[in-house]
Image 1 (tube, protein in one colour):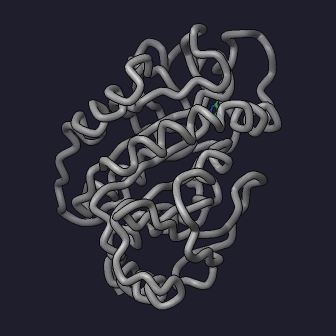
Image 2: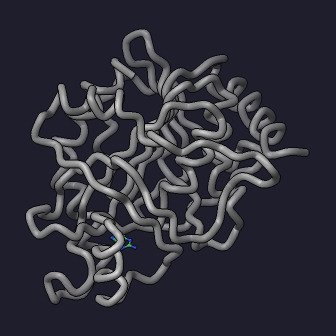
Length: 263
Ligand code: 8IG
């Protein structure tokens, strides 16, 4: 079976379990984002990811292994409360299977969120930043074979514009994905700075590529939860990540709530 056929099977089971034939917008939640979705609309179904073919169990604390179907005005949202990370070693196809399933379920746009490290000292923990472009340092692609997908404007300028209408104070940045699961050394962060990166994390770029391949419009939003290694001198800590998410949930929820109806 091809990845697309596997995604179609997952989407068929999803439709049966949620009672919703067609979803419109997908959201993938990163570290710290869970509290931000509660105000988006009425949750009409919530299923365990492993009830769908091709999904594996969640591995990170703060990532519930569930998928929620939300009714928001005239939109049906498909919210992945967890993601599979590249560092879990399950392969790139497993990482992007949720994205392909969302496309097969009918979603034409996807919001990829993450928690990440920031390179700008003005980005205090809890600052949301729009992803304007990425650098994929995993050295992998979710696409196999001679399929040459254009990634110009991968992170839709139209969707970023909508976000800026809602909140003109939002900053934008270049997200750099490392394989993880270790954080960077200070020397690696200096490298990121020199190659033009602003944000560092362990997700999102492979998913964004798969979303573009599937024809979806991509919005990426990072929640800066810590200063990148070596900038403040303090060690990095996962508890700090979850706390920054809780503290910023109000602002993130408000932003998502105002953007999603316009996607
Ligand atoms: I949250 O500083 C979070 N995720 N690679 N570096 C990387 N991933 C992260 C970081 C960080 N913070």
